[in-house]
Image (tube, rainbow, N blue to C red):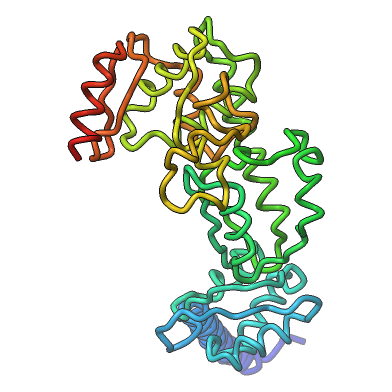
Length: 358
């Protein structure tokens, strides 16, 4: 039996309808997918924008840099809360999230910190992690004595003082230098954080002077009347106290070196003053010159037994590299400079001109 031509016609008519329905469905799915993808992209952009704004925005609207102290042994949340209460962090939860997201919450370190409200999250985190702590200066000025330096140490703020009078007595030996620490602290600016000890600062200054002295001694001129580097340090301290103009250091060194070579007394007033101690009241006088002390270079030959002050690195290098002139005397002109003379006759004329006439 042959199939009916009408049934064939109906089947052929249903096929285009199914195709149209399928296409319509596919179009709807495609549109929904596109919309969903678009929404996802928009959501991602919004999230990225929020993160970008959050990370690049200053941590506070305040303008003043503040000093805060981060306690030790506290959590990142406590530190965040501490900064918030100080008015330096207006989005504590976001910052805490930032720390945990980057897995650095456990790396925050305690101490004093100057917080800039214009910082971003990343800058604040870096300061907390890498200990960008407040540093306080400790300045040693060329020509200061050990007594003056010790007083400066005692007056430093926020320093942990562990050096008492007994500790000072053995400190030179403990650090591997002479028993008397006079002259051994290099005049420079050293820095410390709150809670660091005065011993740390003194050790830094001594080690710095050791390096300078070793370098100078290795590069010394030939034929010096100095037995060792410690004598160079002593001579440097005398040069430092006599020098009023920097360009005269080598000249003054030359005078002292030549006098030592000839067996002449150094006759330097700063050494006499150092030996007088509390008896010095602004004037040496005849009594000061006539009174014997180990530091009276008018009565003793050779160098003083110890340095008389802290010499600068320039004075140390001048001590081992004197000039090669023939000057054996010098006298102050009254303006910080000196008049140098090769003979006693010339020197006496200079004394009459610059001292007696004054």
